[in-house]
Image (cartoon, rainbow, N blue to C red; front, side, top):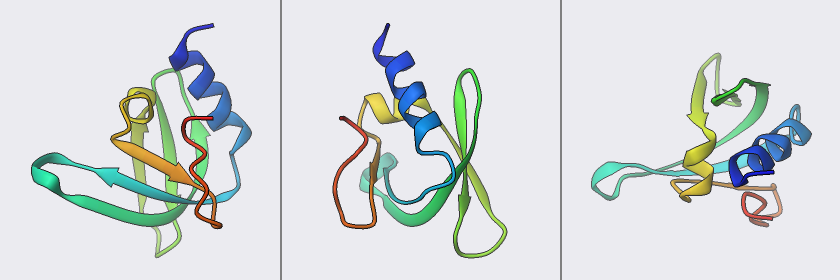
Length: 81
């Protein structure tokens, strides 16, 4: 099982749970938000944001490269377990 497959499996197990996300974008931009993983697909997963009716999508490689760090509400990093 590859690292991407392990991350996809982990994202499947977190479906429906409210989590904290921290995305490290370009030019040192950091975006933090609360959301719920609603769907997982072959290459991406979908996050429904807590604030309003917005959704975001990320690839599993974003988690692998630590551009997206996922933690539980108790601030425990769960993206690399």
